[in-house]
Amino acid sequence: MLKLGLRPNLITFSTLINGLCIRGKVAQALSLLEDMIEEGYWPDLITYNTIINGLCKIGDTTRAVSLLRIMGERGFAPNIVTYNTIIDSLCKDNHVAEALKLFSEIRGKGIPPTFVNYNCLIHVMCNSCQWKEVNRLLDEMVATNCKPNVFTYSILVDALCKEGRVLDAQDIVERMIEQGIQPNIVTYNSLMEGYCLQGKIGEARKVFTLTTNRGFIPSIVGYGKIGEARKVFTSTTNKGFIPSIVSYGIVINGYCKAKRMDEAMELFHGITQNGLIPNVVTYNTLISGMSHVGRPVTAQKRFEEMCAFGLVPNLITYSVLLDGPCKNGQIHEAFRLFHVIVMLLFKGMEELTTLWSMQSSGTTNWSSRMNACLIS
Image 1 (cartoon, rainbow, N blue to C red):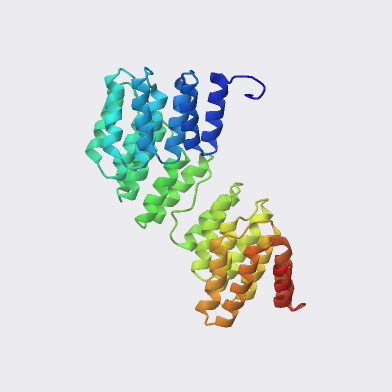
Image 2: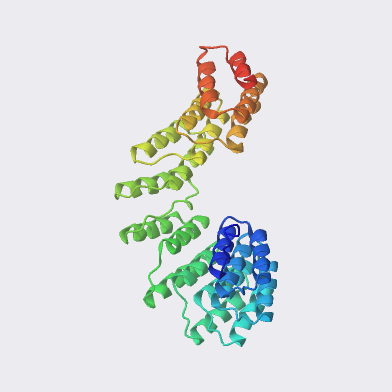
């Protein structure tokens, strides 16, 4: 633009700043903001909110608060979006005092607080077991005609269940329904997990039945016993719901920990049959399970299959591949795998996984072929 003799305008600067923030280059966005001001263009509220949101996303809440103050000094009045962004970030960082200070500032300026403000604060108070403060905020919500919604109540139910107060959580759910607020899948999942933590599998089953009758697909995370988890899993599929890849992973992990690998593999095959694609986590779980029960060949086959699906192994994949032989006293095998892994990290996956497969079947001198491949 400059070479063509064109001068950027406010929209140009704002668009560039937004793009930099989206890509996480917030420092460059801040630098551009100063350049913008030096060129005689004053940023508007949207530009400031964009940078504040970018700062909060990279965890630099302190600088976001500083920019909030600079806005005021430059004559810009922050709006509820500005405050919501910073309060949410402060709560996530567990900076409760600073969040409450900004919350008081909102009310002092006559800006009506929103559900977002209250829910963020209630969430952080629940996490720190400050129940008196939670009740005060709930009363304040009602007093300011910002009545608790399903998200507010779900936060309470989850926190109470984690505290072991599942009966209090059940009371909250009943109160929601009385007020005409329908619990969502998050609410029901929290309640199921709460009962499971207390060992009350029967009560968890009742919640599960209620959940599926209302058309939700519940998570089965809370079922600590693999047998119970499988029953719930089967019940879900029998009702016509296709479990998510996360739910498959949970039950497969349970079978692997119980060293019931045949059942884990049976469930694994059901993933593709239901039109889903296994992810890296699922394969890592199986590779780890096979390695721990002394089935390294099967573990390697899962690795090859994983690569054939186009999935990229991560550090955990390589770690579990090595962990099995080490724990089984197969040190030579562990060194051999380590040698291959190093090569895989340096060369393209497609070519080297083919060589991996060839050496596993004994059809080639894998070591010399891989060394030649690495040198080339």
